[in-house]
Length: 366
Image (cartoon, rainbow, N blue to C red; front, side, top):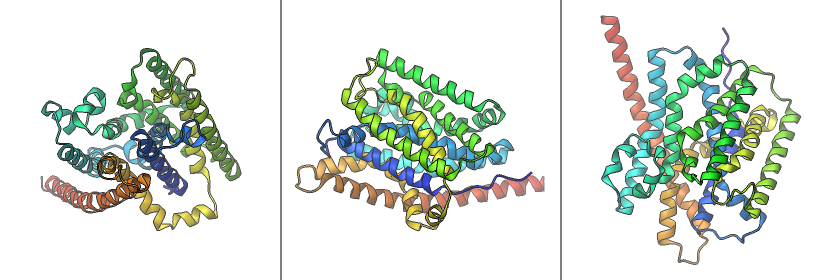
């Protein structure tokens, strides 16, 4: 049985970097570090940067299924351990380091919520964010929950025949939840893993379709991605500016944007993955692109700390506050990437491999 060759998607990496920048701009505007005139096209797009979290979970589901489908479907105790170990080694130490940094910096923490923080389940309880001060890590909690269920989800996705119908049903479920949020003003669902899981699942189904179906033709994929980006940048500012659509205040309930963004982001991800050609080959060899893509994860995690430093020490100065925020965030993310992804992850991976070797030797001796 021939294994599906694993492609590198350089345009997906570019999209990930773009997503990360949009979230940073959103936080800069939200915390009044960057002031843009209201009612403008730019303000409408950047003030709604939270919508790119939909793209993040779609992309995570897409790439995880595409890269790990074969191992998970031929599941053994060893491959399951390896899958979970790799995810935890990359994410958990950096998450704990960020949480401790915020605690020491803010000098405010409630001991009662330590179990939720250590277990990284705080996204189930968004009301606790104000007591911990690190609410920005809700996406890690959601992501680890999705990773925990991924082996089961992968088998379900693999066994499904009507993939498009399931995607439509998952999308309708998200739309229904968004309407409930609007009606009952339950804004905390935006951070909830149970709300994010269907979005992650749609990404997995997109990957299955990408693997099993004929790829989009290059010209059509390019056109589709351009059209979807254009629709995204045109529709979002209009909806934000009017601030009222089906009795939903878009400025307060970001989840309702998912009704529009999930189809557009899904099409963008699928189209970008399908684009091939000389430009993509050149990007394949770009060390700059791969380096920037590698630091997107720490860049997002440490945004909260960079925002605090900028607000506390630079907001009253006459410098470019957005530039200062970016430089601090980039510097901290680069250091975090070297420390956690390069050094600590490598150290923990070696320990895990040695333990695995010992276990195999013990089984042979027995």
